[in-house]
Image (cartoon, rainbow, N blue to C red; front, side, top):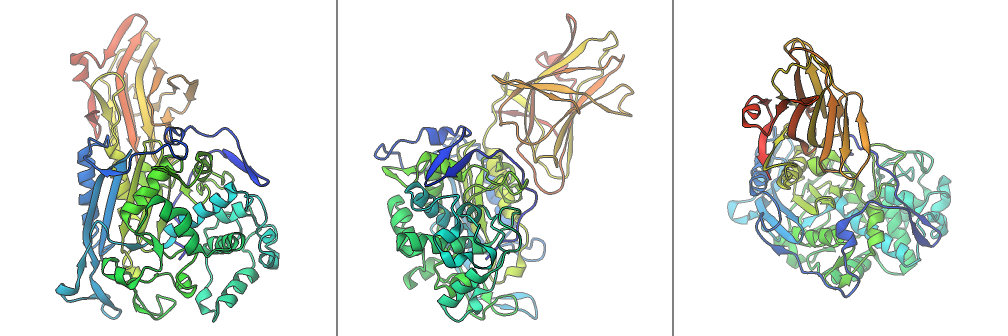
Length: 591
């Protein structure tokens, strides 16, 4: 089922193109994990459970991640967001958090008149477990995308080839120019969804896809559509001669040892599967009663449970194996499923013409609306309508899996993506930032709808030539959350921005003429300098302001110093000066 698409998305550069039957790569962002991945046969240690410290993570935020997730088991605001969930977070090869919460099976029905769930008797309810299996919904699209990229590697599919060159009937109704890449990046022009389940036969369902007219010319707009991945399924099955479920097993799950990932789980799995919705009209397209152990999506169900856009069932550990494989450049142990350069394609934005809708091949990129503070231009992931999410951050080599049954007992009980954002924020917070020059640095915090200020004491800069220097680290939601350097010469009644210059170590100088920093800075320290106005009692401060929706990782300041000629007016390293700083919302933080 097509998820409700998220909030703002941001733009990064196009790094790769596929030409002809092979792949031609431009200069791509460096990914240490992918670069270090061994060739087939080189071997990698398996994932393991371990402590936060062993994963290079801070334990406090991981504990808070669970606390935050448990809050959504309660009314939020009127109904629970999910009946239960399984949370998994890790870094490197260490899974530092693997926690089930709530119930996998709680309700036997939904009472529309009272807007309440009819619970199973207590002895028939099933709590979540680490190995509970979930209907992944649209996270299934990632598997179809990986299978497509594998066929691109093998020369059976060309990324820029028209879909109709493989499926001539697809070219009907003006779709003759739609390409494989446009299917993978949701720029084909398809509308979001059509009720294929209303067609009586499989052949009629396929015919409706072929006869579907486009909502916009190919390549002119981004519109997330299930029809893209259903079409890609048809291409894959045509060029390989194998069904999609067979491809999934032979090309991904068996090589990676993902034993709890498949289409159409057998009846013996049902006690370990999280239930989904009491599916009845009008909120569902089909009258099915409690959906449990079968795919929730109506179109996937009508396609026999095997579909390019939905239908895969899996658990958190198997998805962690997939995440680790991609972060390692396509290799797991001694088995390789993709080349490193192919993984780069999946993590490279092809939608530079559509700022805010960044998309690699199959993977969404840089989406704060569910990636929260984990979002970077290379952070890749996907969500599913049933309450699922997978997020991979190559920058910090971390991964997050949140699997919930948020349509249990009914889809209308949840809205938005708050539990996903909360979990991602805490995992991002758990990745420590080492101070630039000592044991501690000032941290802005990550609160939404907040303003935090860090002010120097009033200084006499009236002789002119005063200059501020410090180290600065920032990563904020672009444009929405802004860090400002400003000064006041009248005791704080009025404030003026102070232009500054930053230089990433080893990089070139970057001017900030408006005195602001926002967005992505590489999550590294920058050296900052700023010329200060002349005034007898000048107050200089950092002000960090966030909106009410999403946040980035925040801002850090270290080593504040003000000099005028050979005179040092302020030096944070001097204890007496350090105590004169006034912090509201900022705090000292150790690595």
